[in-house]
Image 1 (cartoon, rainbow, N blue to C red):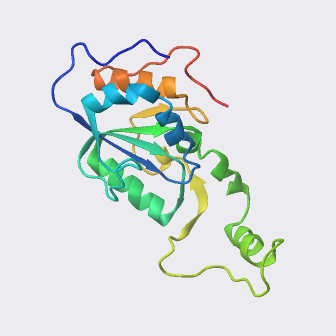
Image 2 (image 1 turned 135 degrees about the vertical axis):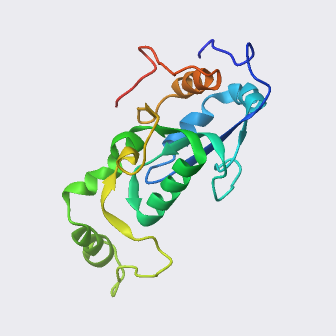
Length: 190
């Protein structure tokens, strides 16, 4: 656990923080919760806007936005652009946001072939299964993209997922107005 704290030299205004998961597994959000009891001093310094913690559906004006996951469909593009428009600082959190991660494994295949296999010809499907075509469903992109391929990103925090200690150290430095730097042991590329 990092010994860095949030108490000294802080401004009294709470920063607004928003988080979202695009094409990913929520592992980065779970890792964020691994800051454990340090969430209490964090909540003294920040308030959450859109986040799984608040269940707010649209991002309002924020100081910091954390994006987990790659960009795999039209809804992801919309949400990511909304975050860029509303967040002063945007952070790509985890391997999927940084480079597309596991969802990008489909990039070497044709989307039509994937949909055919998953919904029409794969094992265990009911007879007559069809590819969903409800207009309410977001259109899939031909490839999964890293978030920086769609919007400008201010910081990248790699890892699958980054550890709770790395997220804590990163946020602590950022909240104190410093450019975050993480030493050896906090960065993971696996």
